[in-house]
Image (cartoon, rainbow, N blue to C red; front, side, top):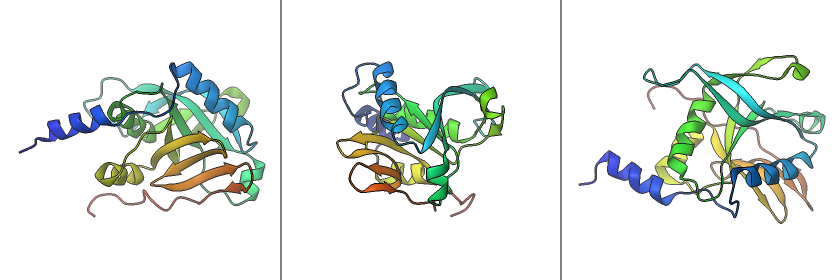
Length: 190
């Protein structure tokens, strides 16, 4: 009989971030380059946060996410209702288990935008990893419930996805596509 600890270890040992980014800085540069070109987001780097829904046993009350993306006019004019999103970046080959836990913490935090954005306090509507990692089944369901997904870059453009649905996609030939999130609205008993 497999224990929960064995199952978690098996998952976290097998699921890793994709790509060929030897260092986190390489991955950050690739993400910034691709997503800046879309003109759809203002991107803020290294934004501090305070956890409001973390574990009562948590070891620290604050954190810092790699990127916050605030929607800009082209996206808002097209009907974007997904608010501000966050992206946490790791190097390729990083274990997905600890990253997933970190993203869940970030989904339950308050962020202060820089002074240039009015020092506004905001919460995120979704959080994405870059590079992506493969997650399906139960883990994929937990991710969708927490509005956690993956950012990706390919030969056709870049995008953000939750539960295999593009929440944002800028395709070189087909242009802009997105869906407003319909997951993550349940609390308590299912």
